[in-house]
Image 1 (tube, one colour):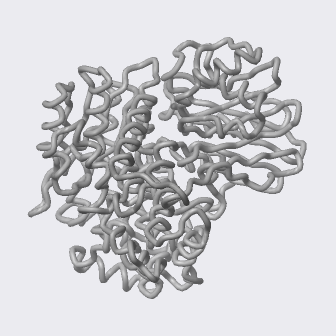
Image 2 (cartoon, rainbow, N blue to C red):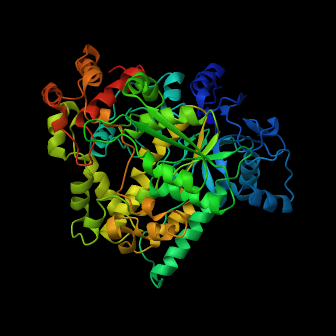
Image 3 (cartoon, helix red, strand yellow):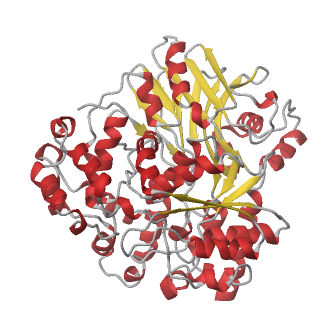
Length: 591
């Protein structure tokens, strides 16, 4: 829902309207239904609206409450806004709209900065308090909605995307060596606050940050779930299974809050299939479901329609299947890369991008199954950590794309300083709220890696077409419950065991017991014909050579035999370096 941007000045100066408008223009695809700008004193706010809740102009943004002296721009959906509104009305607050935006303003006035702890939903916001002359930035607990910023001694600028900040100007093209190390270690994940550019950061999930006319205060973390069984908590497997299913039922139901119809992105896997089954269980019929497939390459199949067809038939959905030819995929790659706030190598990007274009012709909101693999331990690297005596080393062994020694073969000397990625894992594993190695890994993946891979991917690709994606597996109350489920009951029989057992009362067993799948796009893993030509042209260009990120010897070696250089998690090393360069070029970043 929407795109936001703004500027807050620390130096007593006023905001240039054209800066806000440039950022807002870049965010137009996120909110094609309306726009607005607010300027006052040290603040400027811009908004692009996607109408989902309260379709009237009463919920237009920036929303200004003259009585309370508050201006707000906000992106997201608050699923419990009606309950909060009722509580606020009982305390005498009056409302002029029927949506969730105004609830945030009143909630802030009543509860202060801590109002975010009462929200169930996905959100990023900037709230200006006229009386205090402060701006408050905030982001939801799981980082479902993005918020980027660039800061100088005189001001802070913020926006829903990194390219919007580039449009505002005054952003250096200097590459962040820490982020670059993470990019090539964590299959393009760059954890906050870093981004690939030195001058741009992102607000971490579950965090607020207040700006005053004297500058920005230290960010404040407002949520931290516990991973692993709590002391004194003893539940049987059956009890945990029942609790998980009830929490998921509630999460799916919450994400139906909208004044428009809600569809489902149906991959045919357990997670999205379970969402469809739960919606049907709750009485919904004729659900719009959507699947995408690609051309196969040699032995690698390009679609999973056989499983999505089972679910569509079982629950009598209005099913839409989209098959993408290799030619069409290549044609649309540039626009897909342009939609990325940061470079992302997952093949899923182009799948979600093209699927979102089709889905947006039918609905404005979809539910999607992202997050279940991290929350319920569905990946192959979790079981080895059950009894690990070297958590950091074992995690690095099964998760990293390359170690620091291999990084030295890849990157030019100017970018090699220290092993930033291993240090990050060491620091994360040393934090509280998780004791066992596997719980440390699940904590890191759920709260960090998940945010800047599947979550960001879905947000970027759907919002490129004004489509809102909602992710019930990242309902924070469900995450809190799943985090406490004993790890043995999650990793058993290939992972997600407790979720699979909970699903047996809802969806057909052939979908539950199928081999684990993914969003296959074979042509971006095994390069042939025009795809290999595109890669060669990109990496051998004068622009790429002048950037001096990757060593020439490494690039030539991978180009000579692309199929031989596949990462431990089955990605292409060639696509990693190509995508990074294509993203720089697409966004006009020189170095």
